Length: 363
Image (tube, rainbow, N blue to C red; front, top):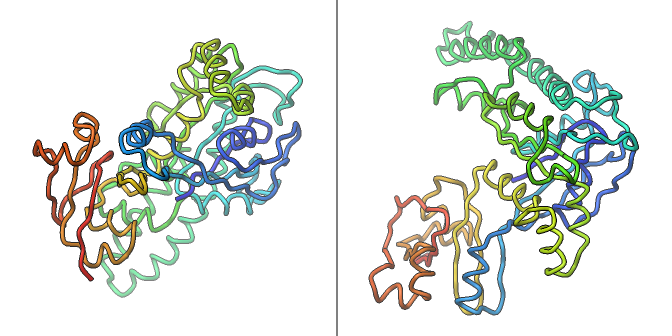
């Protein structure tokens, strides 16, 4: 599951990527600094894993991860191939969710492709390019669907009706994620892999003085995105880069305290990206290993078991489950079992975020 960082050139995408990932993307003060998309595997910060490590004292701890892709800056006309448009739009299509970085700070030493700071204009520039590309996609799909209606195909008729609605929606300058679709329509839309249908997080890149409370630019972004079913957050990306360079934990905490922050902003970005991808975590806990396993929200116990090994899903018998809260309260699996906090769940059980699980299977 990939989360792509997008935005105009010179808004802080690669600097944010460097903060998030062990991979080090080039960050420079000129457009198209990023040509090939950079990819990094990012650890998902989770206090629960730290607590389990403290209680179990395992030989090793394995956290959950998410893939972050740094995609080069888009410009006006990207949907028609301007700049390096087509290639970058293809990179976006491969991602499951988007982090859209918006410049919300003033600094005459950092150039802006449009010459002034206006995050709403910048947001609309990217929105329009992605909407135009989606319009091109659905119009091609419409031609194909219309041909299929000639044989009286009822499903094709429904598809034509839906696509015509989507075209009208896009022509109004609206992204597909704001389209009110039925369950059946949602299946068809997902099959089209539309760029503006992807879940999105707007990251407002502010200056250090605005790191705690944001600024007027951020307020405008929040207002612009309020009906878009999107997440919005702000952080000072350049300051986060300085924090990321510190290797001493106490120094980092002191830096954060001086800014009035309780944790690094990039931690919030990662957790929000994880949520955007509809991912959640369950744990296995033993003396050899405490591990966070990534599953989709709504996965059943056998599907969760299959993340460990396909044989676990094929031969699933049952799962032993303890909630994280009960495990921590009773301080161990044995103690939780003794007080009746360990549950036996079958194939239909929907795994909850934070469950601690042990699977029984037979193949």
